[in-house]
Image 1 (cartoon, helix red, strand yellow):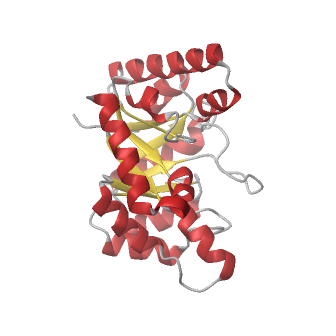
Image 2 (cartoon, rainbow, N blue to C red; image 1 turned 45 degrees about the vertical axis):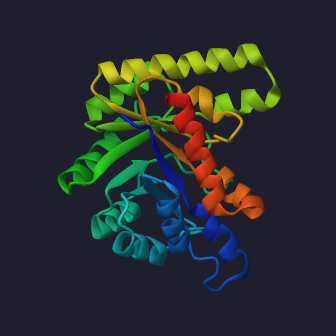
Amino acid sequence: MTLRLGVNIDHVATIRNARGGAHPDPVLAARIAAAAGADGITAHLREDRRHITDADIAALTAEIALPINFEMAATEEMLAIALRHKPHAACIVPEKREERTTEGGLDAAGQHNHLAPLVRRLGDAKIRVSLFIEPDPLQLRMAVALGAPVVELHTGAYAHAVIEGDNNKTERLLERLREAARFGQDLGLEVHAGHGLTFDNVKPVAEISGIAELNIGHFLIGEAIFTGLDAAIRRMRALMDEATA
């Protein structure tokens, strides 16, 4: 099965919001991503609306043919928006008002009682639920207990280890991802991965057996400044295909 690429278009909206107005348009970015080989579009509607807005979610779900992955905090406000627009998938992520980006995975075990009704209501609406978690056996087991069919493994620690040039740490973290992907499959979960992935570090993750999808955003939007979004996505798609050939 071909490893899928989900393109996160949040930071197209970040650039737009820096000046206000309508340019650049995240919906146009999603169309370009689709033409360049993306298999899905990810958008994170944050509590403070720092990038993606409610209007963006409405437009993406109405106008984009690719599956929309709606990243959301575990709040009643975000649940109501997901139930209104009914994206293909909803990925529940931890969210802190003061953080620049999502820092670490969701504590599905510690938040079981809070998450259970949200997961159930999303599932009842035929929205595919994913939990953004650390590659940890306890969190994987809890995803199953909660009834979430998909998990996304947080690859941020691995990405930082690559930047640090610590080869031993990088390999330890890669092995942790490999073990989590195997265990997740054994539990019957569909396993995705993402956070901090770039041209330089994507191949070892793409090579991991059992991972069905990578979600990549910030790097691609940054690279698009230099090469264009189409070219950045096509190169990422090619690197993933080389890794899985």
